[in-house]
Image (cartoon, rainbow, N blue to C red; front, side, top):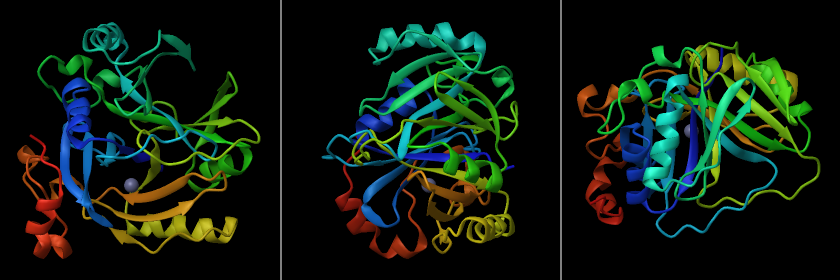
Amino acid sequence: MNAIHHVTAMSGKATRNLDFYSRVLGMRFVKKTVNFDDPGTYHFYFGDGSGNPGSIVTFFPWERATQGVRGVGEIEETWLRIPQSALGFWAHRFIELGVQHESITEQFGRKVLRFEDPDGMKFALVTTPGAETEEAWEVSGIEARNAIRGVDSVTLTVQDSGPTASILTDVFGFNLAGSEGGIERYTVSEGSGVGEAVQLHPVGTAEAGRLGRGSVHHVAFRAKSDAEQAELVEKLSKQFGIQTTPQKDRDYFRSVYFREPGGVLFEIATDDPGFAVDEPFEDLGTSLKLPKFLEPRRAAIEGMLPALG
Ligand code: ZN
């Protein structure tokens, strides 16, 4: 099965991003590193206590980024899983901490609490049967029983759902689980855990979005190993004529990228080696980690990055 591995977005100020995800949402800050392709920019990773694949949301914070413009061919919303009993806690917390949110609705049989992060990225907390048994991270003010478990799904804005659906079903093994309010939900198999679904929102002809803060840059799907990743790459090429990038070593996983027919950037990331590869598990996220090829430039890079206070 090839559920979601992580979701990567663009944010504004690094300090504000770090505060929102680690304190307000209570996710674990599992890695402080830089954008390997642009080392003057941080790359922050947040997840559950172990940084398990599927729990991860990552950000490239740009201090002076302009606001993204929403449109077709991008991810419009990211759903995060909470236990059913945690909904009241979060509704109260959002009011208390002034988090922009909507009233609770219901979709695909689950309660949905929509909110925005400080950069206008759209999220929803969704109650999920069984989420209480999934791994949690406890922070001050958020007990483990209420903690966010990780990504549930992403919703893609596309012109037509057909071409994107084919990639989800034929390459990654998702199946149509239901359709509601003009949105189709595809799951790897309902109840399989974090990252189990993708929603498609077909809107017909519409303007393309423009990346900026609050925009999602890409979604990554899981591959158990290099061998499984290679199989998926071959399937994409043989069945769809889609060529991926060569494999890139992201230190915590190895990735290939491609643009799916609906215009959204997809990644296939390996489960291994994970976030404890370059620092002890207890210390995840506490110091700036750099890939080997950037270590010689550490002093210059540290000088360029904004202070985190
Ligand atoms: Zn990625």
